[in-house]
Image 1 (cartoon, rainbow, N blue to C red):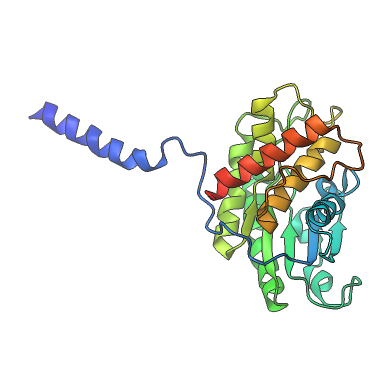
Image 2: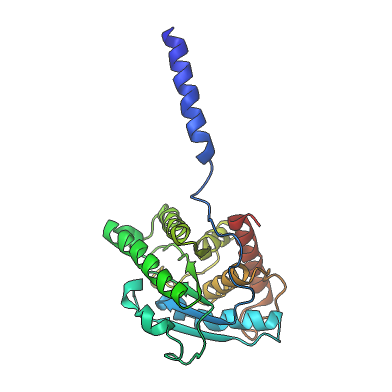
Length: 263
């Protein structure tokens, strides 16, 4: 009798664990672009966005390389080392305040890369995402979250499970407000998995993206926000990124986005 009871309890435990076995984190609730070909886009974040000639420049060039008829109005508001609460989202999203007369159709939010190291910072991030998304919605726009990449050595924050914590943070926060989550951090992880010798981070800090890291991030944003594959896109930063590397990063971004959203 005791043996049967033990076997039954083991079976129940297996049933409970099966749904989450082999899954990195929660599934994103929003799996498709929220705006059809967004033209007025605001990027809000810190140095992760402005390194490498600024992420918004690369994304806009990918868009116009794919369709030259699209006329974009992009803005990027960045503060070095800033968490979201350093930004005045009311001011930034008020039409006309930063040079765009009509409301932004999409606002992409990027938080501090070390948010997951503190419970207080995690709570503040969730609160800020909720507050910011309410302001953005009030203006008639949609919110997207830019999932940051994990640190690598020599950063003191580098750890094997950092990307899992970041993934959970962004997916949970995005699902709570109905925001699209852009899996940049997962694209970095996949690129390193396929080519461990590739250098996506600045070697002096293991935190900030190198130029090709910024390019990979831009391809991931493009694929997520516009629902188009970056594979074959002719934009290569005017020849500064060699064709083989550009093709590899485009493929990784495409694969990551499709897997993340289940597209």
